[in-house]
Image (cartoon, rainbow over all chains, first blue to last red; front, top):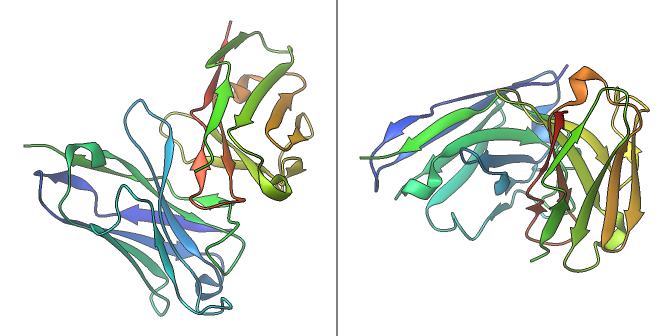
Length: 126
Length: 108
Protein backbone atom coordinates (compact mmCIF):
# COMPACT_ATOMS: atom_id res chain seq x y z
CA UNK A 1 0.00 0.00 0.00
CA UNK A 2 1.30 3.45 -0.93
CA UNK A 3 2.03 5.62 2.08
CA UNK A 4 3.11 9.27 1.91
CA UNK A 5 3.87 11.24 5.06
CA UNK A 6 4.66 14.95 4.95
CA UNK A 7 6.57 16.85 7.61
CA UNK A 8 8.28 20.17 8.15
CA UNK A 9 5.33 22.53 8.20
CA UNK A 10 4.96 25.28 10.75
CA UNK A 11 4.75 28.99 11.40
CA UNK A 12 7.22 31.19 9.53
CA UNK A 13 7.52 34.95 9.10
CA UNK A 14 7.06 36.61 5.72
CA UNK A 15 10.31 36.44 3.80
CA UNK A 16 11.40 33.35 5.71
CA UNK A 17 12.23 29.84 4.59
CA UNK A 18 10.96 26.36 5.32
CA UNK A 19 11.79 22.88 4.06
CA UNK A 20 9.06 20.31 3.65
CA UNK A 21 9.72 16.59 3.39
CA UNK A 22 7.62 13.66 2.24
CA UNK A 23 8.56 10.13 3.25
CA UNK A 24 7.32 7.47 0.85
CA UNK A 25 6.76 3.74 1.21
CA UNK A 26 4.85 0.92 -0.43
CA UNK A 27 6.08 1.51 -3.98
CA UNK A 28 9.28 1.88 -6.01
CA UNK A 29 9.86 5.55 -5.21
CA UNK A 30 12.58 6.12 -7.77
CA UNK A 31 10.37 5.01 -10.66
CA UNK A 32 7.70 7.67 -10.36
CA UNK A 33 7.37 11.41 -10.72
CA UNK A 34 6.44 13.13 -7.48
CA UNK A 35 4.56 16.33 -6.84
CA UNK A 36 3.43 18.98 -4.38
CA UNK A 37 -0.11 20.34 -4.35
CA UNK A 38 -1.41 22.87 -1.83
CA UNK A 39 -4.73 24.02 -0.46
CA UNK A 40 -5.10 27.40 1.21
CA UNK A 41 -7.65 27.61 4.03
CA UNK A 42 -11.14 27.69 2.56
CA UNK A 43 -9.84 27.47 -0.99
CA UNK A 44 -9.40 24.81 -3.64
CA UNK A 45 -6.46 22.66 -4.68
CA UNK A 46 -3.52 24.34 -6.39
CA UNK A 47 -0.67 22.63 -8.22
CA UNK A 48 2.78 23.65 -6.93
CA UNK A 49 5.65 21.60 -8.34
CA UNK A 50 6.78 18.31 -9.90
CA UNK A 51 9.98 16.30 -10.22
CA UNK A 52 10.28 13.48 -12.69
CA UNK A 53 11.88 10.10 -12.20
CA UNK A 54 15.40 9.39 -13.39
CA UNK A 55 13.74 6.81 -15.64
CA UNK A 56 11.84 9.49 -17.50
CA UNK A 57 12.77 9.86 -21.16
CA UNK A 58 14.25 13.29 -20.40
CA UNK A 59 15.93 12.28 -17.16
CA UNK A 60 15.22 14.16 -13.96
CA UNK A 61 13.41 17.43 -14.62
CA UNK A 62 11.47 19.83 -12.47
CA UNK A 63 8.45 22.02 -13.03
CA UNK A 64 6.96 24.85 -10.99
CA UNK A 65 3.74 26.80 -10.97
CA UNK A 66 4.27 30.46 -11.81
CA UNK A 67 3.19 31.44 -8.28
CA UNK A 68 6.24 29.75 -6.74
CA UNK A 69 8.81 29.80 -9.54
CA UNK A 70 12.13 31.19 -8.38
CA UNK A 71 11.19 30.83 -4.70
CA UNK A 72 10.57 27.09 -4.26
CA UNK A 73 12.88 24.20 -5.13
CA UNK A 74 11.74 20.59 -5.40
CA UNK A 75 14.19 17.73 -4.96
CA UNK A 76 14.22 14.03 -4.22
CA UNK A 77 16.49 11.55 -2.48
CA UNK A 78 15.76 8.14 -3.95
CA UNK A 79 18.06 6.36 -1.51
CA UNK A 80 15.93 7.66 1.36
CA UNK A 81 12.63 7.56 -0.56
CA UNK A 82 12.06 11.16 0.34
CA UNK A 83 10.71 14.17 -1.53
CA UNK A 84 11.57 17.71 -0.47
CA UNK A 85 10.26 21.19 -1.09
CA UNK A 86 12.57 24.05 -0.13
CA UNK A 87 10.50 27.19 0.22
CA UNK A 88 12.05 30.65 0.50
CA UNK A 89 10.88 34.26 0.32
CA UNK A 90 7.60 33.04 1.76
CA UNK A 91 4.52 35.22 1.50
CA UNK A 92 1.20 35.28 3.33
CA UNK A 93 -0.45 33.81 0.26
CA UNK A 94 1.74 30.70 0.57
CA UNK A 95 -0.19 29.78 3.72
CA UNK A 96 -1.73 26.38 2.97
CA UNK A 97 -1.77 22.69 3.59
CA UNK A 98 0.93 21.19 1.39
CA UNK A 99 0.26 17.71 0.04
CA UNK A 100 2.79 15.32 -1.40
CA UNK A 101 1.36 13.31 -4.28
CA UNK A 102 2.43 10.49 -6.53
CA UNK A 103 1.56 10.02 -10.18
CA UNK A 104 1.60 6.84 -12.25
CA UNK A 105 4.10 8.15 -14.75
CA UNK A 106 7.82 8.73 -14.60
CA UNK A 107 7.63 12.06 -16.40
CA UNK A 108 6.15 15.41 -15.48
CA UNK A 109 3.69 15.75 -18.34
CA UNK A 110 0.15 14.43 -18.57
CA UNK A 111 0.03 13.60 -14.87
CA UNK A 112 -2.75 13.03 -12.42
CA UNK A 113 -2.26 12.11 -8.79
CA UNK A 114 -3.16 8.57 -7.71
CA UNK A 115 -1.92 8.76 -4.12
CA UNK A 116 -1.75 11.62 -1.65
CA UNK A 117 -0.32 12.27 1.78
CA UNK A 118 -2.26 13.77 4.69
CA UNK A 119 -0.59 17.14 4.26
CA UNK A 120 1.44 19.51 6.41
CA UNK A 121 0.33 23.04 7.30
CA UNK A 122 2.50 26.03 6.46
CA UNK A 123 1.48 29.33 8.01
CA UNK A 124 3.22 32.51 6.87
CA UNK A 125 2.52 35.28 9.33
CA UNK A 126 4.28 37.86 11.45
CA UNK B 1 -3.77 28.08 -19.01
CA UNK B 2 -6.88 25.91 -19.01
CA UNK B 3 -9.38 27.30 -16.52
CA UNK B 4 -11.78 24.73 -15.08
CA UNK B 5 -15.13 25.96 -13.79
CA UNK B 6 -17.09 23.60 -11.59
CA UNK B 7 -20.80 23.92 -10.98
CA UNK B 8 -22.77 24.12 -8.91
CA UNK B 9 -20.67 25.43 -6.08
CA UNK B 10 -22.80 23.51 -3.60
CA UNK B 11 -25.18 20.62 -4.18
CA UNK B 12 -27.65 19.88 -1.37
CA UNK B 13 -29.02 16.36 -1.67
CA UNK B 14 -30.32 13.50 0.47
CA UNK B 15 -28.76 10.05 0.78
CA UNK B 16 -30.00 7.85 -2.03
CA UNK B 17 -30.34 10.71 -4.50
CA UNK B 18 -28.34 11.15 -7.68
CA UNK B 19 -25.65 13.81 -7.89
CA UNK B 20 -24.40 15.31 -11.13
CA UNK B 21 -21.35 17.57 -10.95
CA UNK B 22 -20.14 19.64 -13.88
CA UNK B 23 -16.62 20.65 -14.87
CA UNK B 24 -16.28 23.02 -17.82
CA UNK B 25 -12.94 23.90 -19.39
CA UNK B 26 -12.01 27.20 -21.01
CA UNK B 27 -10.51 25.27 -23.92
CA UNK B 28 -10.64 21.71 -25.11
CA UNK B 29 -8.96 19.21 -22.80
CA UNK B 30 -6.77 17.09 -25.03
CA UNK B 31 -7.41 13.34 -25.07
CA UNK B 32 -9.96 13.75 -22.27
CA UNK B 33 -7.11 14.08 -19.81
CA UNK B 34 -9.39 14.92 -16.93
CA UNK B 35 -9.28 13.51 -13.40
CA UNK B 36 -11.62 13.74 -10.41
CA UNK B 37 -10.81 13.77 -6.69
CA UNK B 38 -12.80 13.66 -3.48
CA UNK B 39 -11.74 15.78 -0.51
CA UNK B 40 -13.07 15.54 3.02
CA UNK B 41 -12.04 17.84 5.89
CA UNK B 42 -8.78 16.82 7.54
CA UNK B 43 -8.25 14.00 5.07
CA UNK B 44 -5.99 13.52 2.09
CA UNK B 45 -7.58 13.99 -1.32
CA UNK B 46 -8.78 10.72 -2.79
CA UNK B 47 -8.24 9.88 -6.44
CA UNK B 48 -11.50 8.83 -8.11
CA UNK B 49 -11.10 8.84 -11.86
CA UNK B 50 -8.81 9.60 -14.79
CA UNK B 51 -9.29 9.85 -18.55
CA UNK B 52 -12.66 11.44 -17.77
CA UNK B 53 -14.34 8.08 -17.18
CA UNK B 54 -11.86 5.48 -15.91
CA UNK B 55 -12.49 4.67 -12.26
CA UNK B 56 -9.52 4.27 -9.96
CA UNK B 57 -8.96 0.94 -8.26
CA UNK B 58 -11.41 0.38 -5.44
CA UNK B 59 -13.79 3.18 -6.38
CA UNK B 60 -17.44 2.18 -6.27
CA UNK B 61 -19.33 1.84 -9.54
CA UNK B 62 -21.78 4.36 -8.12
CA UNK B 63 -19.26 6.89 -9.42
CA UNK B 64 -19.16 7.47 -13.16
CA UNK B 65 -17.50 10.06 -15.33
CA UNK B 66 -18.40 11.33 -18.77
CA UNK B 67 -17.67 14.06 -21.24
CA UNK B 68 -15.09 15.24 -23.69
CA UNK B 69 -13.73 18.45 -25.15
CA UNK B 70 -14.74 21.18 -22.75
CA UNK B 71 -17.64 19.61 -20.82
CA UNK B 72 -17.25 16.86 -18.25
CA UNK B 73 -19.50 15.38 -15.57
CA UNK B 74 -19.07 13.29 -12.47
CA UNK B 75 -22.21 11.39 -11.49
CA UNK B 76 -22.85 9.64 -8.19
CA UNK B 77 -25.80 7.38 -8.82
CA UNK B 78 -27.03 6.92 -5.25
CA UNK B 79 -25.47 9.03 -2.56
CA UNK B 80 -24.14 7.18 0.46
CA UNK B 81 -23.34 9.02 3.72
CA UNK B 82 -19.60 8.74 3.00
CA UNK B 83 -20.00 10.51 -0.37
CA UNK B 84 -20.72 13.91 1.15
CA UNK B 85 -17.53 15.82 0.43
CA UNK B 86 -15.95 18.33 -1.93
CA UNK B 87 -15.13 17.13 -5.43
CA UNK B 88 -12.45 18.60 -7.67
CA UNK B 89 -11.71 18.11 -11.34
CA UNK B 90 -8.18 18.45 -12.73
CA UNK B 91 -6.94 18.64 -16.29
CA UNK B 92 -3.59 17.18 -17.23
CA UNK B 93 -3.66 17.60 -20.98
CA UNK B 94 -1.74 20.83 -21.03
CA UNK B 95 0.67 22.76 -18.90
CA UNK B 96 0.21 24.08 -16.29
CA UNK B 97 -1.88 21.44 -14.56
CA UNK B 98 -5.03 23.08 -13.24
CA UNK B 99 -7.83 22.23 -10.84
CA UNK B 100 -11.41 23.37 -10.75
CA UNK B 101 -12.70 25.33 -7.78
CA UNK B 102 -14.63 22.37 -6.40
CA UNK B 103 -18.24 21.34 -5.82
CA UNK B 104 -19.40 20.67 -2.28
CA UNK B 105 -21.95 17.88 -1.98
CA UNK B 106 -23.74 18.42 1.31
CA UNK B 107 -26.54 16.65 3.13
CA UNK B 108 -29.90 18.30 2.60
